[in-house]
Amino acid sequence: MALDIKVSKSYFKAHALELLRRVEATGEPLILSDRGRLVLEIRPYRGEEVRKRLRGTLLRYEQPTKPTDEPWEALPVWLG
Image (cartoon, rainbow, N blue to C red):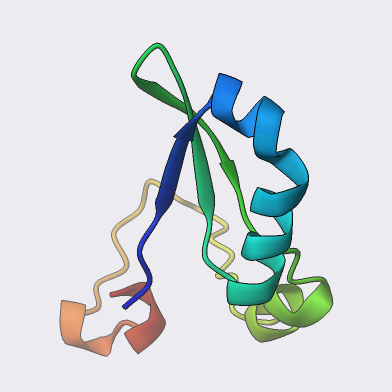
């Protein structure tokens, strides 16, 4: 289970290199806050890996407002 690392912008400014190395090494995202409000997420770059997994999974609807007439169970698993 990955735990999100949450730090303030001012803490990040003082410890940026250390925090970025930790994100790179662990793969856990880093979340920055500004006055207690979460504003940014820094996570490792995944490159083409995500795009390759998603390639060919986009459904195209010529008439998006028309019902599909398919029961929910017939939809691809990755939509759930």
